Image 1: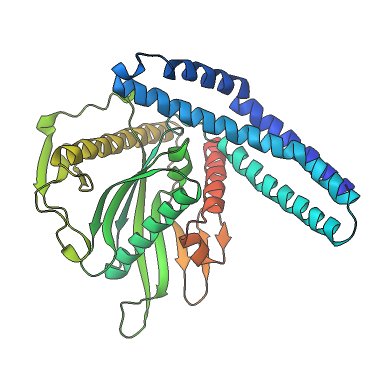
Image 2: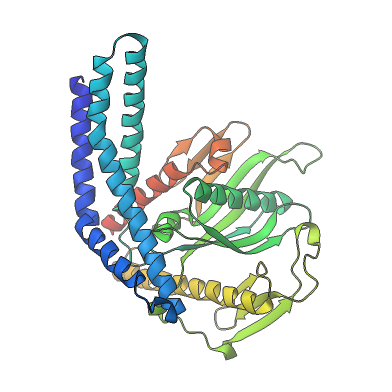
Length: 371
């Protein structure tokens, strides 16, 4: 193993040491042990809501511990791979060395991603995320772009094996969607995806323009933390307008013969949410209430942040338009805050957005430190 490789492995080990200290591996192990005891209690399921909370927390803690210990084990095994490569002659040795180099590069990226996780220290960062996508200016192209963004985030979640619940999809008449709301269930999903909030812009030759002209369209992304019991987000039924209607699919086609879809309007704030993906009106109303509570919680968080900014005599560091996806006359996706860019829009729109997310988290940490 040459000196450069040895030095990099030492640096990676030092970085991982720091990450393990920040994430407090000893406490994480203790949490897993304690939650395992709670999950094994014979009367656990007497309270189903508490049981679901315990098993969910246990699953997440176990997954996080497996991820970190797995990276440490891979890093400890890597010198052995290099030793075996050096002891093997010919083409087989070259292949073994290439495999060791590939594993080193993979480990470097995984440790960098884990390091970004340590920057998520906000009150709600560990929560699940509730994502809402809306088409904005640009007509049918904007609706199509909104659907492209929804697919991008669903593919990102799929790549990471994060479960997703789609609560509502409002299809546009010609193509695409007017809006969609879905929850991503993963440790630190809110902290991770919150940097995606803002206006996204698409520049391309419109497939809906008979003259093949270039079109610029916009879609908005909102991200809110999923509400927990401790948040005390209470909603007075008197402040709600409840509308029921039939669920619809693409092109306005009805997909249900009963009025099972539910739309809630919170009169004091004007926030409107809807849910049509459950089987019954009661289930859709319960899901819509969860979405409304999450949006009210995020509104409260933003108001508290605005007060903090005002006290520090500084405005919000968030610009509304945050990313451009250019498909013509050249190919590029660029974040307007971090300057991070990729020359392969197809890969980005297929869910490869970790680079943008990590750059966004680092950028936000810098902005917070400068306040």
